Image 1 (cartoon, rainbow, N blue to C red):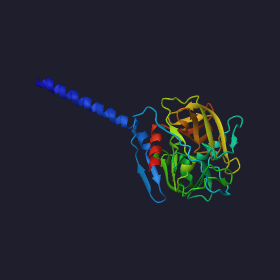
Image 2: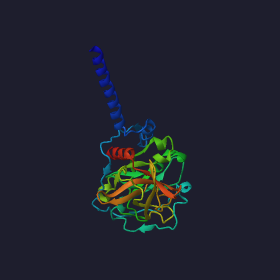
Image 3: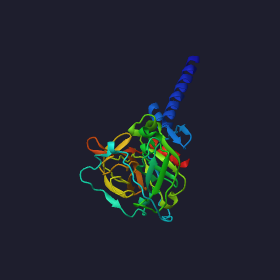
Image 4: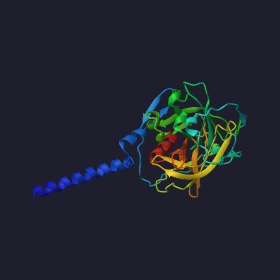
Length: 318
């Protein structure tokens, strides 16, 4: 009897042990310790750098943040005259795949184009102004590539950032905004791993109330191979501050990146890779970061995985 009772207690203990391990694994999205470390959030406010780990949840098979079209109200028009520098030449010189199919967006005040942001940045070890692209995800948060906010060969964190939503050449229909906090993850900042090349910018101001913002979603269930996508941003081979777009298909699917044949160029890093879902509207599934490589030849963006989704959602609420 005593032996039977001990076996029963042992079986219950083992059951709780394994159940606890499963629950712990679920709470971290079944990610390895290395992956959790690479997805650790790092922020910088101009003075202090902070590190924080996001708790990942698997309560939903697919995670979706919905878009918002905004009021469309424009601020008093102002203008700017600047030159942008291609920060991505070493990646982007083959970014036009076949024939150049890009077209200029002239209606930058229509949605979703008004939620696409021209970024101009300066870094500590350079006197140049660099060009990038981003997209609004709420009233004051811009998602972009990690190398737009943290450049290893230019002194690290950007020290100056100007964000101009819906810019059209020298015209700034929604004004321009300074930054408050920038974000990326350890996989990019500490390890310079291109699979973790994404970040965000918290603005001093709330242009998203007028411009609206993109939705973003994971594609764990809706497998993205062969999906049609758009990539829209501010390439630096075109007149400064002009917005260009192209469409294509997702041709390669990797754990943390998507490859697509839509044409891009330098300074489009941070552009949304998006599609107009019937159930979710204008929704990003990746963040453009690199020019064409591999077979088939594709441009590449950081895939919005569960971990990326959670970090973006945390950043925009801070």
